Length: 475
Image 1 (cartoon, rainbow, N blue to C red):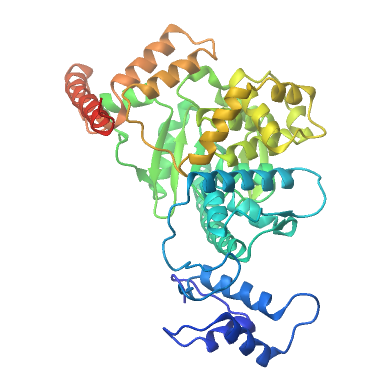
Image 2 (cartoon, rainbow, N blue to C red):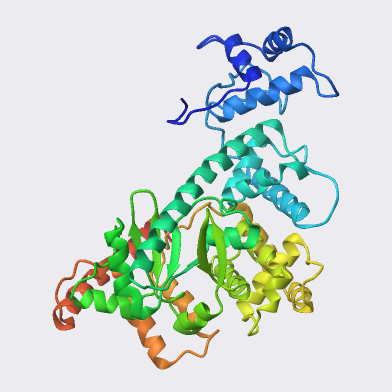
């Protein structure tokens, strides 16, 4: 038992553990001799030491063994995976991210042979970069085309296995959620996450595990909410609950998604795809063009391939193209001829930048339309250089915004990409002034009572953010 999981050991791994007394320190040479004494010299070109080393790294990755300071495994010189490694230098991080980008480029191309990690990139830095950009499962799925250091190979394989287990739980919860919605006649489209992984890559677990994103028609929000809460999900803190209150009406009118928390998974329940209503086609249009993917034995409705490309491209742009996985999604979707057969509208400017960046990062697909090559050519060099720098230092997860109003400014820029009405601007202003985390506890059914209280809390919240910003960046 390791971390509440049962770990099956190979005969060689079992022999290695027998050679290491609990709490003792044994050299690689001694363990190798013990393995050879039990199994003899291996056939072929792989040495007994190499086989033993790989098995040891597998055990280290599973936290069964640790490597002591004075124990030399001779992959990168002395190492101590049982201790928290020192943060890599900026140059090391940049080199590791560039290496991961190059590995992905190789996997997305038709280049023969296997890509090998540069000798100057350590295993720990390579693993950190792969985790940082959420591409560990994808790399592990293509190990036959990669030559990774033994330590990196083992650590990423273990990570991918754990993420696959998480994705399996998500797929099971998704089936339960779809059944609950179907029982009350609610149409639903599943997007991002395991649905996108199935559609784009043919493997629901290859993008790792996250949450479930469901889109319903605005008119179906209430029955969908009620069905999912009966099935075990609840509103997350900071979101209003369904009741006859001004807070709920304001939230539905100005918002587009609600997070529901369950025992094993979270659901982001959307009734619009984006805060700006005209950013994407409405639900009925998307539903009429839907695709069906089979996930874990269940038929799952999702976006048409071209709608998936448009949404993934917008999502990558919204995040500033900081994560390689987002561009990998775009590249995989735009490499399929089926995607372009379902095209019914031109991509927007931000979406075309995502397409161009994906082509610059991983190559222009052979069968892609000329628009892809044109998009790659139109990516400004300054923008590309800035994005490459951002990818080197980006955190694995979204960071909260400390600057008041920045999120509102970003949404205003989205208005410029659509033919937004004055009502849309008013909706965004109302959302910015009265955000859900400040209105969630308001139970009054009237705005005349609730709004003044929320505005007072809003003023206090903005003041606290400004003070925090000044303390972090004094003049």
